[in-house]
Length: 465
Image 1 (tube, rainbow, N blue to C red):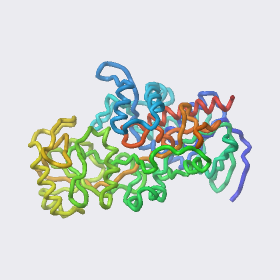
Image 2: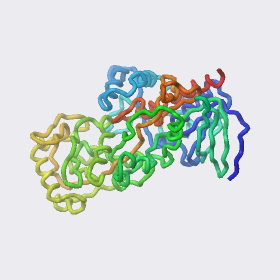
Image 3: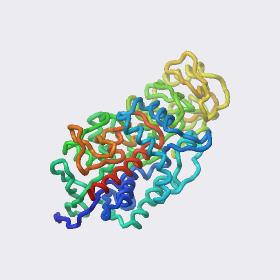
Image 4: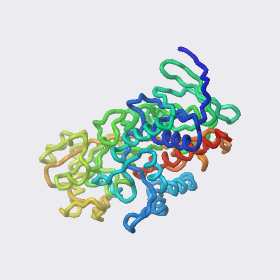
């Protein structure tokens, strides 16, 4: 393997070619940095990390009374699913700065479309990119090219060179060549460690063998591990995951958003023992969909089934995989890996506690079971109209919550709480400063965009200080 000492001196080096990294590179270039380099682990065809699978972003906006989404409501929504943020000041500043994002994104190539129909209930709180995350990423790359930002693909960072709490350069392997690239400031935006199965097993054990990793296989936490080794402060629960219920037939990696199942509020979910284990109707989907992945991860064999019937099959977004279908429960049960007798008893108990054959609605309806534990607090309709449908579910992991601690200027903190001089972070690698459990739809893009902009602007300032 060859070794080359790089001659170019970059003003800002960004590691990670997803939304957070691209926002950082755009902001750095806009902030006056003349030589900006983006190092992307993936190939050009697979660039963009998990951002390729996104569809919308949550942001504050103001308009007519029924269209306004104020900071206080945003913060209340966040607290309703996560409890108090890990760092309340960073959470509040992220929410406040989110109001600027749509205009900033539009100026850098983003286009918009009306919200998609279905069960997400995000039309008022979120903005939808035209063409989804892949189109957004492509637009950002095109803008970076016009601005003269250099991008290197298949570039794996093996080390970060830090001397006396100051970034000096990175050791990069690309196409068999090991290279030292020097820079004045550094932005870490390379995601979490959700694709590193051996690392996940430290916290989840053999259950990881049944996990599905929804996003890129390149988010293996290599940069995070390097930074932690260099004395940065870890923040966030190392066992914490953004995990949703996905079809059990999904690929191990990179299945994306289409593998998610939106059926849960309109049916019941049973584990392999044939028993329900949580309230399927607790809340509307954007506030509780990320609860179900972790719940299923705790079940026997990390497997569950969502069961619906003819009256609710059209209430949610069509799945990418065909459901298991039968004209009777007797014919459905043999097709599932469940305790048959317990499953039939669970259905019978649920139907007896349900609220009759009222029409299913997409909004919370208050239809609650009677005398059942766990209760179902909304959409508690009996499952009694054939045909019957079942969807096999496994935990679908989107990203991990443990990352590096940062301050309000996106500077990475050392173990004493002091900021490194020229080391910044954005995106999943620092989302644990805000998220500890649960998730709000579109919030990952919000954190990545806000802190990407902030990190890029601050890195550009430092490069010329």
